[in-house]
Image 1 (spheres, rainbow over the protein chains, first blue to last red):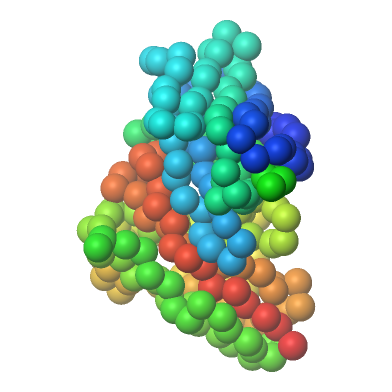
Image 2: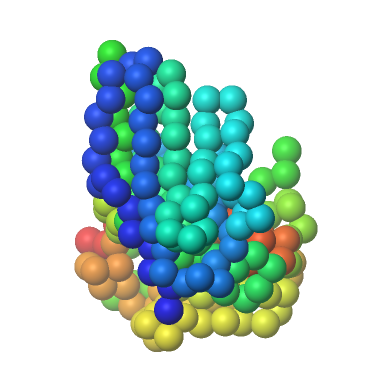
Length: 113
Length: 112
């Protein structure tokens, strides 16, 4: 079955710097890759997603890249702010199928003032 | 605003005392999911409903049951909670199987 590995497990960056979180997946049939942000005591919130027909997607300070050949995808946050501090989960699945979402193990991002 | 609502946000129960957690949605989505999330871990899918069709994960204990009386509501029943069942329980919905999932705020369950 699908397996998603996520690194690093913790990440601390200076406010204003960039943060990068990387994931790899095992199922070459996966074609949908959402990223979730989970703040303390709250449910995960979808922040950006990418489908396998594109290599990069950007939304303001957040971008995601996908390398289908290598089965890698990454989240990039630029100009980090204190409110970016949270746990981030990558995930993979086959869009529009009955396949369940497979989550990575999470990255705890801390922004140092 | 369309959303996923979970009640209560915090639930305390005693070892072995049945408990029910509830989820409602105003998104009119076909699929509703229940996840268990323990500290510092990813959410773990327990089961999901596609409309009235119930789908149980193979490793979900029999102690966990679910009901979906209508499109808007879904319940998680824990028949005999053990200490190991203390966790955050997350409800999520999606328009169709495999499409974007929207999570509720979760219910934190404490078992004494």
